Image 1 (cartoon, helix red, strand yellow):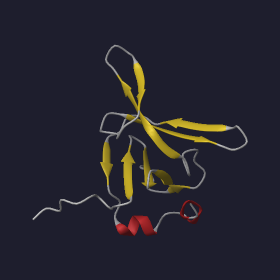
Image 2 (cartoon, rainbow, N blue to C red):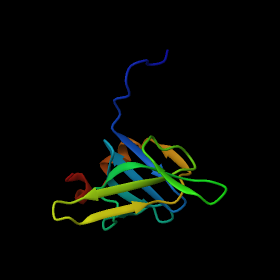
Image 3 (tube, rainbow, N blue to C red):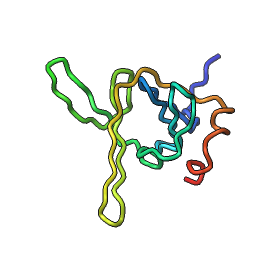
Length: 115
């Protein structure tokens, strides 16, 4: 029997070639290097909100879109701060979109858990 209600899970992992971006409620709470499996505590995406996707087309065009990412899209993070500074990042193309295991969520660095 499948569940037909709304999805209440709060965590997702967006996986690129080299990096995993761990999000809780659309905000990046942890970044992990795929080669070493180590969490990075100083990454520009930390604490940034997922704003949308960037699609690349065969003719070389690159266009931003608001919407849910799918495999093959790049994702776009942004943070407009009160002091007028803006932090942005566009990832490489997504290879997978996963749900993290509970043990992985518990292992998120303390810095990210303060969000």
